[in-house]
Image (cartoon, rainbow, N blue to C red; front, side):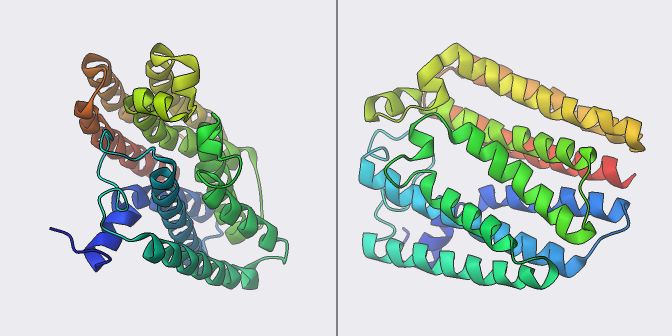
Length: 293
């Protein structure tokens, strides 16, 4: 039994399994920086810390807001949420959100030593996104913009600026790699929304699966994985001849999609959530390997 506001409760609230995504983003960006002769380990570590804190902030805000809106209730199909289970009190969660935001800002300030003052606006954008994903008068996740937000802030922004801060350069390969990461990570949101489509519809959360239907959700999940690999393949022209190894991700992605289609609905889809997390990790490792080789 998890005690209220205990360390175990806070660890559960941060959703440690999801933080692997941040590690993948920084790892891919830094491997590309290394390939281009610009790896700066201190910058990479600061970017990793900032990315993880921003993702933790988004997770805590999501936990708090979904509980307050009634989206997380006794009928929830996904993994237990901290506030809905009574692991963390409302007052403690609000404090945790503020402290995480402050820690993220302080970490981001460290990056100012390696870049221009305009980075402040990038950091503020990440902070605002982490909150407005499920909070505010127009929560993105509740109006069908969740997938776009994930591709931008779990792909283009972290990969782009992690690479840019280390190399002071931008190129088409960076854009393709960043987009590939965002598309792959969005499969996790898609399986979540596919599983929760009925409850989301009842609570007024209009995800793309709610807006466009179950078949769209299934198809989009499959297409996202293929699109992620397709973004990588043009890098072979730019000197990354081993980038084809990312295609080894597809058999597992397709197998997970088939299982997802066979199960269809209910808590049993949580197994596909775990498999999707595994697939994303594999994709990140393969992409890193393809860049380094």
